[in-house]
View 1: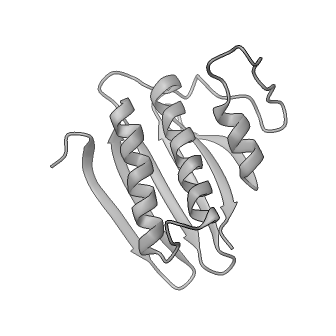
View 2: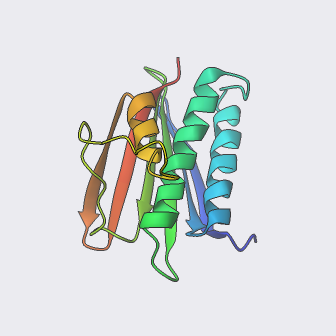
Length: 153
């Protein structure tokens, strides 16, 4: 098994939604792998690699996974990528869960773009610009989930 993939990948499908979940190492390699696995899953679900929707979704996964690695990393803890494709309205929900609930990003609508000379700080600005909705949830005291939704059709 690839050292960057922890435990198992779960894929389920019913009439209304398809779900894919994978745990990845909280490393730059794990973040890159998240984008590649998401792109492959979208292709299997029928969203071709050469579509704008596919490229946008892959970019959103990359940004959220990179943020989990940079801002949500705890030594020895993975991050989780969950993709949910809602078939009825062709909406993809992307969720990235990391181990740093105390490090919550700014709330939607309050992001300030970075100064041009800054080398980082554009990830969530891109998420806010490209996603229909995004936000953060903390379901337990040990993790936080940053999520976004994007229309594929």
